[in-house]
Length: 468
Image (cartoon, rainbow, N blue to C red; front, side, top):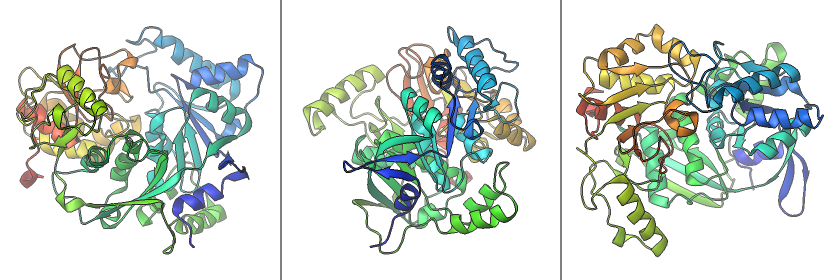
C-alpha cells in the first residue's frame, strides 16, 4: 500500500516511534509571537536552559501590538507593552531572528513564515498558535502547540506527538465567481460539525484545489482547526514550488536542486488509503455566513436561520438557543439584509494580497454605508506594501475603510481593541465566539467579498458575481 502525503511528511521527521502510537517528531522551525512566545523564552531563560538551535527559531510582533498608523510599543491592551518588550529582550538574549515593529518582515506569524521562507515544503513547523495549520498549504507539516510544548521544542528540537488519523477532502468542479475558499471552509464545518475532523490530518485534493492560487489555499488550511483537525496539507505543485524557491530563506545552488526534487515527490501515492474521505461539489457552493457563535453555526447567505428545536440533540439545541439569543437573531428569518454596524477585513485567514484584491474589486468606486465602521488590516507589512504599490489602499480609504498597519488586530479582543457591545459585525476572521471581538459584540463570519459587499450595503449582502 502506498503512502499519503502526510505519511511522507510524518515519517521523514520521526526520531523514535513508541508502541502507543506516539512518536518523537523532529521540529525544523519554531515560530513565536510576542503574546505566548515571550513567556516561553522567559521561562527557559529563568531556568537557565539554552535553546537547542537558535538559528531555526523566528519571532514576530503580531498579537497584542496596535495596528494604528504611527504605532509604537504602546498598546490598547493592558500590559501589552510588557509582552512586546519581553519578546524583544528574549530575542536579544537568545539570538533568534525577530521581526520587530517597523521591520519590513513583520506581520502575523503564519504569513511571515510563508513570506520569509521559514516554512517550506517538506519542513516541520510549530508555533504556539492554533492556526499554524495554515502553512500546510505549502506542503509542510505544521501544527499549533501550547506554551509548555513550545518550551520543550525550543530546548530539544523534538516533541512527542500522537499520530493522527487521515482524511482526504476531495474537491470536484470549480469554485464559482463570488464564492471563495472561506465559503468552502465554512460549508465543510457547517455540514459535518465543528468536531467533524477531530483526530485527523486532512489532505485537500481534487480539481477545485488544483485550480486555486496558492494564497487561497492558505485560507482553507487555516480553517481546519475550527473543524477540530490536527492539521491540513496540500501537495506542492509548480506554483507552490516557484513560490518557495523565491523566498528569502529558500535553499540556494546545489541545495536548491535537491530541494526541488524533494518537493516534487511530496504527493500522495495512487494506492494510498485514508481513514475517511469527504467529497465536495465545489460548483454548488454559495456564499456562507455564520448565524451563531461557532463556525459550525453557518448557513448559505440566502437560507433561513434554523430553529433550535430542529437540532439533532439536546446539546446542539441548547447551544443554538443561547447563540440565537446572544446574536439577536430570529429563527426562520434571513441573514441577508440584516443591518450591520461594522465590517472587518483581516486576520491570518483573509488578509493576504488575494483577499485585499478581491475586496477592493467590490469596493472600487463605491462607498461604505453611513453608520458602518469599516476596517482593513493587512496580514503583514510586506502584504501592506504590495497592496499600496497596486493602489489598493486608496480603493479602501476612498470607499471609507480605515487602512491599518499589519497585525492580528480585531481578530480577537485580547489585543485590547474591540467593537462596541451589541454591535453586529461582519468579519473575515476565523472565530465568532461570544466576546471574540469585544464584550457583547455579535460577529458574523464571511469571505472578503461578502464583507466588502455588506459594508457597502450596510447590511449582510453577497457580492454580485456578475461584476467580479
